[in-house]
Image 1: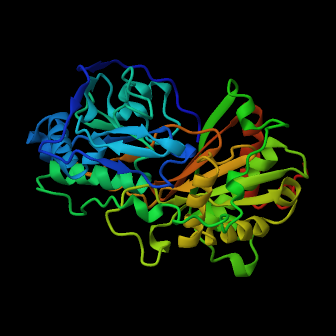
Image 2: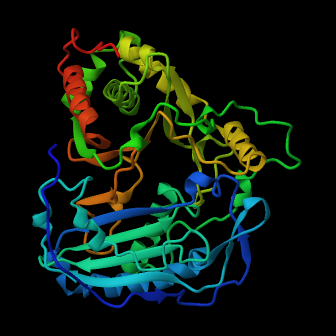
Image 3: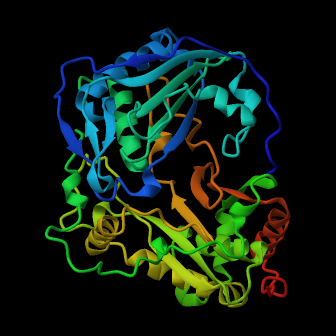
Length: 446
């Protein structure tokens, strides 16, 4: 998929306002879990939804007005979202449930949905920031609003819903749960169909702490970037999205031994991307490279985490391989590594991560020679209906240097990738060779 063409339009925003809960809420301190407050979650994550004009529901009024009222009502149930984050001893994070509220912006734009092109997916034109305005002073992790929402009416009658979330509060599943609650109330419900559950203590480190974590956690290895990585050249980066339909996935499966051909789409696609990206970046053959798989652990507890739990509940297990092995061995090697890595995530693994966070000062996952892949195909962004139908696109806005998302698309999966421009050229060729089964070209030595 070709990079997006520049798109210029004007957005007229009303003065940003604070939307508070529509009713009384408890004033209390609620601690985040030891998974929530790790360094890798101490950031803001942007998401955007694009909605078409629905002629049958044209009389419902301006989406911003409806959503604003629903937001205030939803915050009664999700009242910690209306609070502010504080930090205590040992970098422990907590929510001061002040009921202050979240930032809300109503806007209109002189651009139609069709102007964004037929394929709505990252990378979006740089003007997307007009649809999610960074209100000065609102973007900090501590002592700032935990949510910023902008609803923009488009010239065609469609609209966008853009949200920026303090990641310590929720992962993708938790954010979708909150957005769904707002959407249900916007459609007339009195309360969410799934009531929110806090219970962050379920993902705290055991008390008393054990002597050491029970897993190695190579995802949190800390070492210097002595040889340079993708992060070393931010001024010459290329962004592209790649489409993988049934034909492309079938072609990749043909490269696998028979016993692996029933593996999941995530497994074979992630293995392919990791391998091609490593070839493109050309590390030394003996260098270790990492793949972090984002794995939702909710169903892997015994019993599973309660329905309605909206905190961070993902594991980030890391596969580690020598670059030479990854690029020279058959694709089946990478698939086996991916499958084994995902399988380690369970209740004990998550407890071990929590222990590591407490013991080592809540470190960030490593980004040195690392590639992270997150599967959003079942996250539910595309199901959020505020009353005007489901979105034509819902999900992440930006592409991060070391990360890719598997995003649902019509008849397949879209994967945004960000690489240095020279490496992107090689990456495109490697992916093309693998899909076309050019066996003589897919074992490129480093």
